[in-house]
Each structure stands twice: as C-alpha cells, then as structure tokens.
Length: 396
Image (cartoon, rainbow, N blue to C red; front, side):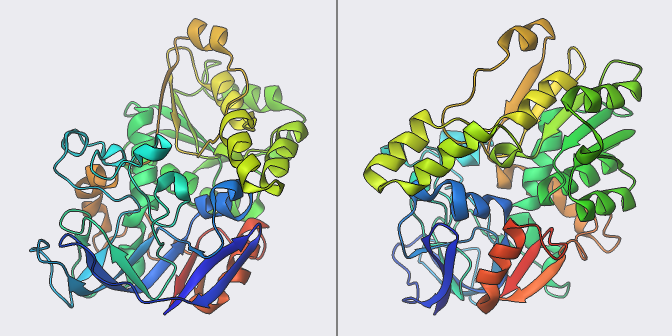
C-alpha cells in the first residue's frame, strides 16, 4: 500500500509499504477514505525529529471502511463506516473508566514513561504505524472505533478523530461560564474550532489572537473578536487591549492552542533546532530533558487571564520548560488544566452538533483537500502557512 513516511527533518515521502494485517483478536483493519494533516504532525516534521525513525508512517486523523476484524471485535463488521480516535485505548481499565483514555493503562508506553499509545507519533507514544496511508491496523478496535451512519460526506465526521474532541476538551477544561468570556491564543484548526465550540456552548465574548491573515478572517466570519499580533509592539499592548474589553479584568478563561509552535525566543528555537540536528543517541536526551520550550503564548495567557480565571492548554509542549512565573500564578489564583484530548470521553456530547444544521461548520472546515500522493507538498504548504492553508484533508 501507499503511505506517508518520515525520512528526516522536513522530509516526508509517499512510499510503498507492506499492507497491515490482523495481529491480535482486538484488532481491525480499515481502508482509509479521508485522513487529516494536523498541526501536531508539524512537530514531527521539524521539532520532535530526535524521536523519529526513517520509515515511520505518519498521521493520526483517519476515517474509513472496515475491511477485517479480529475475533473479539463484535460490534463492527466489514463494510461499516468508522472514525478512529488518535489515541489507542482499551475502554475497560481504571483510566478509561475515569474518562482519561489518553492515560489508558493497557496501552501506556511505560518504557518511555508516557501515556496511551498514539497513531503515527514517535517512539515516545509507541511508534504505532499511522493513518496517512491506504490502510490502517487499529489496535483495541473493540472500543476505539466509532461507527458512523452512511450518507453524509467524510468531512461531517472526520474531525471526531482529533480536532473536535481536542477543541471540545479545551473549552470544557477552560470552564467558561455561560455568558462569560474566553480568549483563544492561536487560530489554527484547534483554536478555530475551540472558538466555534465556545460560542455554541454559551460564551458571550470570544477573543481570538493570531498573526496569519487567513486564520483571522475565518474566525471573524464566525463572530470571533480577533486581534492581529502584528498590530502590537509587545505582549503588554495585546493584554491591555483585551482587558479594555473586559472591564479591565481580563477574560474569564484563556485557551492556549499554540503550544511549542509559539513565536518565542530565538535562543529557545536554536536549542530545539540543534537537538534535531544531532545523532539520535545525543539528540533525544537533549530534546526530552534539556530543551527549552518556547513559552511566549503560555506566558501571555498567564498575564491575560483574569484573577481567579482558568487556563486551558491544548497546544503541545515538549521538553523542559522555561521557568514558570509561579508567583504570578499563585497571586492571581489561576487554575490550569491540560493534556491530550480524551476522545471517547467527549464524542457522545459532540455528536448532536454534527446533525444537518452543522452549527460548528465542519462541512467546509477544510481549506484544502488533496490526494495522498501530494503529502510532501501538503506538509510544506501547511508548515509555511502558504496558500491560505488552515486545515488539510488527504484522500488515498
């Protein structure tokens, strides 16, 4: 089959690889009909290269048609249409019962000290072959896969694999009071969708911050009050502008949807780039233990949120962080929640929003739909924020 493989920093290719097969009775194999390109994939493209191996199959946002199931997968049969969450979870362990499927005790990558295995996402998360391919082996298919109705196009349900539950959890963790206010830093796919969900769930004021014109324009069309970072000389000016709209307090909650892609210090970026250029034996420990996260967005969030407010982190951070402003956080009584989205915890709540009315605008959420063979161009375009690319969907 054809699959998108990682070959090095900023080097992805579409290669012929062996077809996946059933290996355990809890497996399924699906034929991919749509697969998303996620901002997290760009971390592998450039920042997290020390944890990659040439030939790794990328991707973690799939949906498709069941081809084959193992003996213990009883709720699915060949021909069923399914969407597959990005994390692999069993559904019956302590963590899954607690709704923390990204901490699944059955699939935890204990050798790396990490949580549940993820599709297509480095050895830290199990080096499981990913979903930017023609076919995908799905472990723990007795729980993970979500059976879908026939009829609506793939875009109606594809984002249940990652974008929708990640943005939903970001808003849920932000605990925005009904009629309250929230600022979203970063208007990529997750930040954009978080704005839509916050408004759908009753937030009165939603402020969106970014510096990419196409992203800002998309958010404005959905009723978000946008702020272009390029229009401010420094963080304090931005914070003051939004505070002026919130009785001088700041918003009730701030969602950091930027993570390690933040426009932070040149020194921090240099450390990350140096780590990715070293041999694996040296680069992985440097990246994991000693690299400096670029925390510009997080520091802005801490400064911006009102006293007693909540920070919700959905952007991915990796490595050892810069010193945190603990005195400010303590003094302001800030609450903070974070983590990979627990997909199956939220899907039943999201499903009513995927009916005919399409209140979240999923049908036209993708800006680009490309064949899988164009994956190298898709990665480069998305990483460089060219051609108005906000969300890319590929089809084998």
